[in-house]
Image (cartoon, rainbow over all chains, first blue to last red; front, side):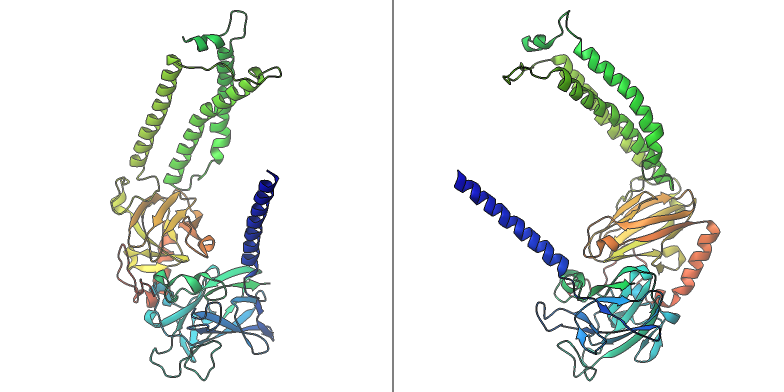
Amino acid sequence: MRVRGVAVAATFSGLVALVVLYIVFFLTSAPAALSAVVTNGTARLTLQTVASYGHPPFPDWVSYLARDSTGHWRHTTIFKVPAHTLVKVTVYEYDSATGLRNNFLAKVQGTKGGVEFLNGKALSTVNPDSAAHTFTVPDLNLNVPLPGVDANAKNQCSVAPCNVSEAHNTITFSFVSPGPGSYRWQCFVPCALGFLYGNGGPMQTIGYMDGLIEVS
Amino acid sequence: MSESSAAVAPTPAGPRHGLRIVGTWAIATAVVVPVMIWVVGPHIPPGSMSQQARDQHDVNVALAALAMPVLLMIWVYFGYAVRNFRAEGDAIVDGPPITGNARIQATWLIVTSVMVLGLAVFGTIDLLSTGGSGGGEGPAPLAKPADAASALQIQVIGQQWAWTFRYPGYGGVETNELALPVGREVEFHVTSLDVAHSFWAYELAVKADAIPGSDNVAYVKALRTGSFQVRCAELCGLWHGHMNTTGSVLTDAGFSSWIANEQKENAAVTKDLPPYSHVYYPVPLRNA
């Protein structure tokens, strides 16, 4: 009888430990936040999108990366910016187009002047079929579609971090950060290769095609 | 009456338990039901912003008032039994079995049948007479409001994880804001571009599933201007909890001005939208 009790208690404790470990892992698995570089009252974020991250645990997942103040690329999608500040964003877009599921999101919204700059050219809308990704913050009504590189372009990047010598588009835009808070952002192009509707995997995982803008 | 029932029947010298229970229940009901209707009732959701919200509110109050006597009977009987029928002495033994009381069985069956069937009839009549009471009715609504033919059509499009809205009567313009005019019947056409969502305009009392490849129609008539919450009521992935926005009920003039501005602001992207349709099968709708 006593042996059975000990066995039941040990099994129960083991299961509880597994649940606790899972919760701890879940709560601590988010990538580290990266602070925007602030100079002269302007915050700067430099990002890149890649077709495949190229490293464990999901080397074939599409992903965003961000460059820190030392110039190194970090695999994170959580950004810190100061409140009520002009934020200038540069995105090096290395992926090819998938196309928008909802063409309405081809419109640039919420940026300074209502435009983005694609390789220096101002655009207020893009061809919906040309979008590889979007950088969208729904609560800020901010939406920036990111046109992809030519699928047949030579010298395409295959592993992050990509280099500007490889085929890419440069998209820049700016917006004014809101008051303090945490704002989710996501890509609205169904770009998750191999997942139903293209919306699984990296599209559902912070650190790849979703993230947070922490405003403080 | 069976032998066992006779065993618990009151003796001339004993208390009349049934009378006590019914009397206590009747007093509690007489006190609590008016409180439920006139004190708690005004605070029962979803309020009175639309005809459908007002109707749902009235139904919720009626159901709560009808449920109170049943709840009170259970509580009164339970409390009375705990106080008066508690076993005494060291030995714990079961009470005498009670079987075969035809009067109680018939009363129970008749009362519950009348309540359930009455509520079914009440609910059906209410749904048909209020144009579906704000619920999604599928692509061919059975219950239409009287002025459905002149209703303003608004398409609600769900996708992971945002709502957008199309106005086919205004050039098919699409917006990420929802606005509707006060006092006019609105016909929502709810659909999805990817997985199942559920369009829930809380204060308007509208709730309709957004299913890819399906057109789900719901009617609403707003009774006053103001703002209302829009949420997704179907667990749909990572940002399901963030899939919300705020809608507005505007005056006629305010709505005309707003929609004209939306048409102007979104002219460039409207030309790239697919022709208005009740459902969409956008590319890439596949295993990407």
